[in-house]
Image (cartoon, one colour):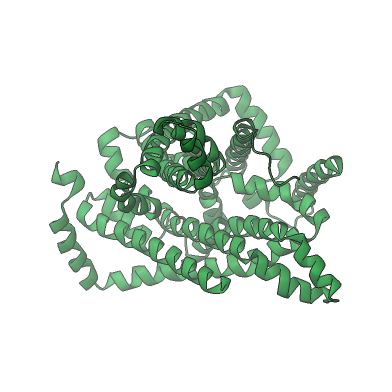
Length: 218
Length: 253
């Protein structure tokens, strides 16, 4: 193999040390992380209630399901140039990319979660005179949690790709920006470090959610 | 019931379009940023007449077909192999997880050196993004087949390859189709981001190009076409699933 294209493990290791010691590293990571966390938090806070509402009220669901499915089927990253036009090249446009990429799978899976709740559970609660908000909070919500968490996990991996691609498309700093610069300069060893970093972060984040899932289900 | 459902769906799209058009005409939204449906429609017709629209669609669809097609082929073959032989699964596992969560677009400059700017690079990105979910779901599907039916097949004297082709594979159709659906979305995403960065034709390129010229209307035309392609693709897969999974009786619904 030609080292120019693929680099080699020892070079990647050396490059990693170099990057870790550099000052811009902490800033790039914190910028990307901040964009990701804000977008993701908004997606969870807004997506789950919307999904629960749509799952519970049929008319609302029939009304909003087609546009939601249309957005779901569209590659979210095609929207990046539009966000840049609307929100500029700074942090807001990346937050928007993460938010939209993550919120749609969260909504879709929350809807599915509510709809999969075993109807006899609701009937039992009703026959024991449970109030409406009790049924919702104590029966429907816990029963649809597994599906919601799958949505969060899917949304998260899309959000991570979203941050990196949006920063590659246009930005002044962040991990994606570094990746673009290093790639265009063919510094494959440095590039590989960042790619592995994002990959490891994605893996750690999804495993984290899976752990949370298991704990919530007990 | 079915009727009221489709009417409400049509109604919601109509409301969105009318509200969008009205908001721009009343001056609440700046058409420079949001364009408006009637302008987009006129531009769509104009691009269709000039042939630009179909040229872009042909390029993107071609890249998508090759990228997704090869992803399905490779994903299914590796997935079946790894689902059936545990040792292959163990060997492939670390690579799969790396590929699944790695931002593969990062390698586009290297792909450009290998394959040149344009079609082949876009296909490579699309393939790499799409094949992991196909493979992961195929593995999961084959491994989660009810052991009872495998045992039943064996005790009736089925040979190993019969068990695989006639029992395990048909039983994992829903998982495999779920993987195909994820893969389809990712293949389309791969085509679009590949074109954003490393192409000079296609729908994704047209979005990026018109975005840089601040031609919002032209951007929306390509975006709408991409959305339409996504919807058509997903619907086709649902139809396929119904076709291959007809024997399953379901929970009596």
